[in-house]
Length: 321
Image (cartoon, rainbow, N blue to C red; front, side, top):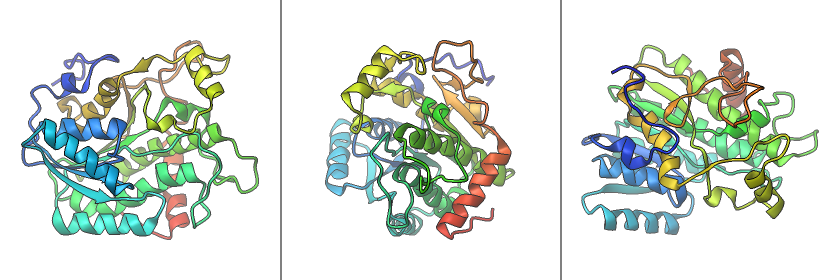
């Protein structure tokens, strides 16, 4: 199937993308499934017949979300996993549980994230946004690779954002130890890291059949924005000289590109791409007044590899695939 044969767009929904998709026998893990896009993504995958492993930090909320999906989809095959992406020990336990009970994993959707939060640090001293959005998913993906590589055509989908254009990763001071903390620069480099992780992962796993993509889901009102001030929200809705006005999507529209990345036959055999609006993203143009496209640094394979190596140093964990 040619890349232009699936006529999806910015307003396509999860139902549009998943119509006719059969995932019977497939196993998918989705992070951040206690609310928002994670719930919608898990629900759509379950409706298509996949066994869906729902991983989130808050066990009570995750179980509630799972129960709501089961009520809507009585045949849904669901399991919950406790996962705190700021805690490497929790990530390790979650990974070991998956490898023990589901030795083959077809889809990994790295959906969970935080945005523009006040300065916080993990026990390791990592800045919170890069820790949760990138480092946690880097470790989870690496520890789950044995299961992913048992699948015939596994896919890893990282949720990035057009916000990656705020900043590349600052390798000199990624955790704001010496420079003044800026929540948007921190968010930007974390979302760039999500893209570089997908690029480097695809490079490292060339020839194995694994595909890795980074996705901009669009602007959606979810709990991701819980740290935003009234001024932040006003700027997002009205625009600023630095940031054009956003067009907001519904949650089903927001999940559509993730699901397209996970299931589209048009993407078979491809990887290391930035996707938005259910299409392969294009380079951003300085003359373009929209928020579409990706920054000049986004798909840089050398910086993606540098981040891979840096993250291994930060975590003391090697993934030499």
